[in-house]
Image 1: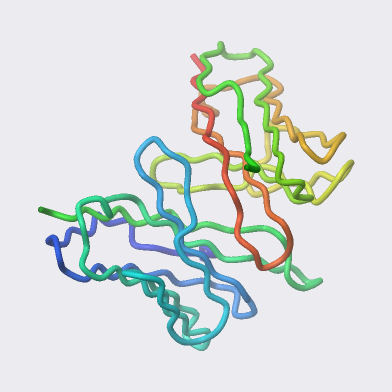
Image 2: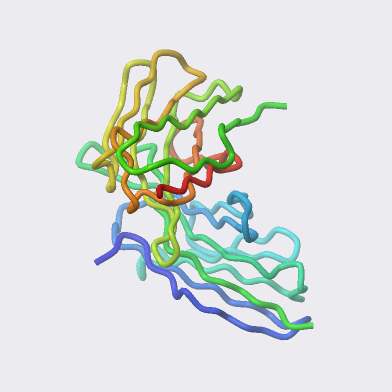
Length: 115
Length: 112
């Protein structure tokens, strides 16, 4: 089982709709979770970080975390064509000694927002 | 502004040659990472370092090496380049546990 799993997509949504991106992780003890956006040919850039169960909102973006279900999601409201990109989920990994500084990434979900 | 600079941005090399990709950061972060990105595989960790003289293997470390002689630099060396190492390579840095990573612009390496 991969440590971080995402549906590769593509996920196609019409402009103005809500895009929902999902991620599951295998390490129940993981403590920090991140969503990155990556445009084609560019490097990943951080959109959201979340550490506690529940929702965290920042503008049109909402991250949701459910540690019991080992599930983290990203909602994009009022989707715009400029949101078309690959969205990467990342989890801070752990070893027997506790939290590490390594970020483990999912394979990413390609989002296409149709005008 | 603090930044991460990777060089070269693009490189074509021949099979069997030794190649070194540079990563220089001005964030003053102790933690530095090298990832490769391939279609269908996402970002996979090659090597990482938690500080000067510290290096660790990631999930896809075979054929690669790193050394850390100062805080700012973590060069990635391909000892004998293979076609399977054709990829986009990203350097990243991180301040401490449970914080986000910052990425360089990437290096596109083609091994022919």
